[in-house]
Amino acid sequence: HGFYGSGRVKIGKKGDFATSPSLSPDFSGLLAVQIADWFKQLNRINFTGLPLSLVELGPGYGSLAFDLIVAIEKIIPELLSNIELIFVENNFSMIQKQKNKFRNFSIVPIYWRSIDELVDSPVVGIILANEFLDALPVERIIFENNKLYRQGVALIERYPHSYLTYKKLPISKNFSNSIRYVSESIGFAIPPKEAHDGWCSEWHNNLEPWLTKASKSLIYGSMLFIDYFIEAKRYYTSSRSSGTILAYKDQTASSELLFEPGYWDLTSH
Image 1: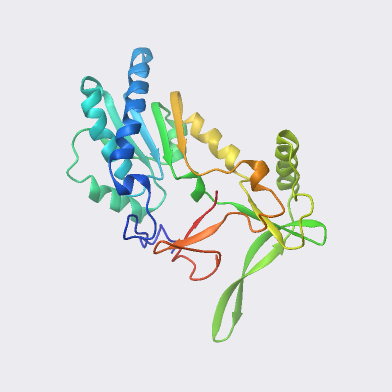
Image 2 (image 1 turned 60 degrees about the horizontal axis):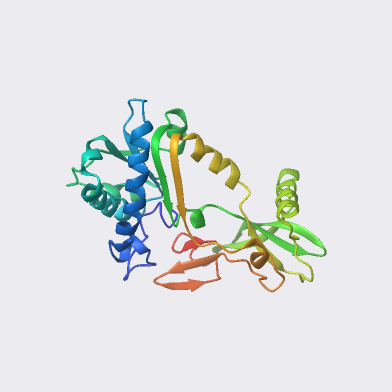
């Protein structure tokens, strides 16, 4: 019933939001130069007998991979017979959209795999993720009465209606240790100095184990992540009191995260 799982998402100029690959093939054309060079390097040291894999995480409609393979065909046609495309996609409705886009595509073989399947059977190649990290789940933390809490969501049922509301939850020891370790390593305070009651932000508590899985998916190769980022010292400040998490629909941004759940794309920098 979520925004992606339900198939409601519309990507492009007339959709809920646009990404570089959804606007034109130019972005893929620029990336193809680097990716083709990486494939040439990998081909020289690949003695596994495995093909060269282009793995895309969260590929959306598949526009980036489609245009990339078309561009790579022009740059390194001699390697094309040894290249395969792998999509890592959790949502069935998005897989159907991708299969529809590639139904007449015959340049390279295409497979759909989970990240766990890739960990079990790692590949030689390149992992690509464009605007993927900002869609990963985040924890939301809130500062009240000189204490940090997790911000949870509760279902309130009052006949004849039900609605969602925020709820304060305790921070676990592992969560607290994660915040302490990163803030001490990089040199910033959470909460920041002069933060007022109600200050909140986001925390990617599971990012490190997820990246570990991604790295274990490669026997050898490269990972390329393209996304929006903010430096920690600019991110965790008293003035940025609501973090960066937003909801998007019809090219409109909203901070009302619980309004029409499943009908808006939630994203965080």
